[in-house]
Amino acid sequence: MLRKSAHHQKAQHLLEARELLLVRPYTALELARLLGVNKRTALRYIEELGAIEVMRDGRSPRYQLMQKEELSPVEALVTHSALRLLYHHTPGYEPTYLSALNKLARRLPMPVQELALKSTQDLQHRSLAYQDQGLAMARVAEAWFKQQLLEFDYLKPGGSGRPRKNLIEVYFLEVSRTNLGMYVIGYERNHHKALRTYKLSRMRRLRLVGEPGAYTIPKDFDPRAYLSNAWGVVGSSGGQPVEVRLLFRPEAAYRIEEGGYPNLRIHHKHPDGRLEVVITAGTDSQNFPLELLSWVQSWGARVEVLEPENLRQRWLQEAQQIAALRDKI
Image (cartoon, rainbow, N blue to C red; front, side, top):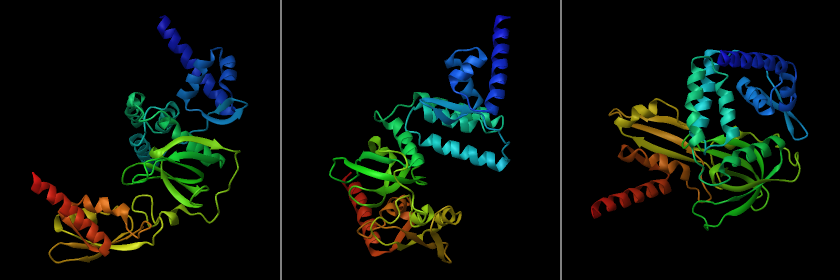
């Protein structure tokens, strides 16, 4: 009987909290006083109702419950897809990130909502690769939304092995279609004085510098144009875009024809089932389409590189190196 009464009281409190939060923003302490509960309980109600932080009163955030519009089937599917994509590249357990995923899940209709919430529960047990990994995304987001400078150490693969300090204006965040990693695009002030792309997982010791509103994202910055030649997210980083010609064997051709590959167009279908395609790809400072190489190699012997010559030679050399390893066995 007591258990039933406690459930009834909680349901009543949730209804009252919902009505209050629909009218105007409240701090957790204000809501707790109105409901006659402690602050921790009020915060739990705020999370369960899906109220969002809309402003700050000093150090205390104010929460409000926005009118929830029912999603159409397509909108619900897009929301679910975004949730799953974010789940897969979550670096580890970070309470704010998990809370955001759960809020996204609560926008979904039942029974999908219940399944979506279950699908994120294991994040509480996912460990971080390094101490500040869970805070990196929060720092980047805050810098982007407040247009505040972001300073961090960056360990470039294949570099000197020592991290370099960077200071950037965050312009855009992109999720790679190839590895689901998150990348930060911004204007680097210290060394390059140009737009650069950074992989979030390689950014260390992030901190906000100066005051909010320190920069303005240029009106002529268009992420579509910046990423237009990117196979992953980097695009052209020093070199000019290049056209890559590939010849796929019949057993791989049908997968290419299914689509989903950016900047790829079918050039010619051979009578024997082979498929010749052309891809416009960005290049590095040596005019080499580095981002495309690993994708080409993933097809094994089912593809042949025809052009450009530097990509064809690199592809052949690495294939020969693999064959040489086999001969040693």
